[in-house]
Amino acid sequence: MVSVSERPAVPRTVLNTPTGEVLIPSIGYGVWQVPDDEVDSAVGTALEAGYRHIDTARIYGNEAGVGRALKATSVPRDEIFVTTKVWNSDHGREGTLRAFDASMRRLGLEVLDLYLIHWPVPSLDRYLETWAALRELRDAGRVRAIGVCNFHEGHLRRVEQESGEWPAINQIELHPYLQQGTLREFQAQRGIVTESWSPLASGKRVLDDPVVRRIAQRHDATAAQVVIAWHLALGLVVIPKSVTPARIVENLAAVGLELTRADLVELGTLDQGFRTGPDPDEFAVL
Ligand SMILES: NC(=O)c1ccc[n+]([C@@H]2O[C@H](COP(=O)([O-])OP(=O)(O)OC[C@H]3O[C@@H](n4cnc5c(N)ncnc54)[C@H](OP(=O)(O)O)[C@@H]3O)[C@@H](O)[C@H]2O)c1
Image (cartoon, rainbow, N blue to C red; front, side, top):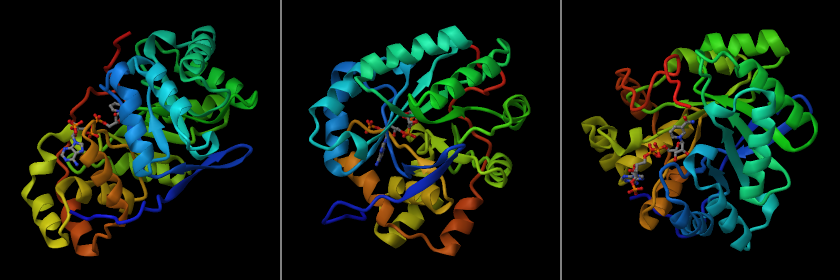
């Protein structure tokens, strides 16, 4: 396993906003499916390991626990980047503004770093109103940067046509079995940062892939480290989740792993359009 004797220096990615650039640590700690009463200790471990970016959401039910961890840590608030998301049932201006206030109360924060629309829910067709509310919050100084998750190219185009502004970031399912090449390219050309959710494919299959394992062996690294290093080499922001302290440390140490051109070419052949989650065009759970 690639190890670090000292805390690794985490690279950062520029988010473009109308008022300037906001820096987001390129690797963050995702907390989906971490229960609220366990998340404060998990986030504490992550901060101790050197993570400075936490990714939560209203629907994860653990914003309060994240808030407790932020309160308990000795790491200064301005060194930690916090993301949360507005859920599908809160779409629309009033719902979004209310949901934001509630999230901020639970997190115990004055200003949020990044607020995202969690899913476009095209069947509701309210994401333009929700986007307008996010812009309002950003322009009022309550959040530093705004973006979306799970948006296809068509959803992004509508947002830009309506508001004259591209989201700073789109958080999408992305891993070696779902490489999202076309959307990544579209976003790169427009200055939209691509952020990978379920970057390890939720621990399924990808970590057992023979190509990934062979590359890991060559570098004396773990499969998870190879996959995380691949995301970083592609210029993506990546938010692996683990509740296992040794893995939390192991995953961050992937910033020290430099893959070769040949490794990247090999990993590039693994795409198989395999989604662990739903298709954003169809997902409509409220
Ligand atoms: N915007 C969205 O719609 C959306 C959707 C899904 C997820 N997300 C975000 O993306 C984050 C990450 O996605 P995810 O939680 O689905 O999955 P993930 O990070 O791809 O994988 C997590 C799984 O992999 C295991 N794992 C982690 N590190 C490992 C390692 N070094 N070796 C072996 N196994 C390892 C974890 O097990 P243990 O925990 O048991 O160690 C867990 O089962 C979420 O937490 C959330 O913040 C966003």
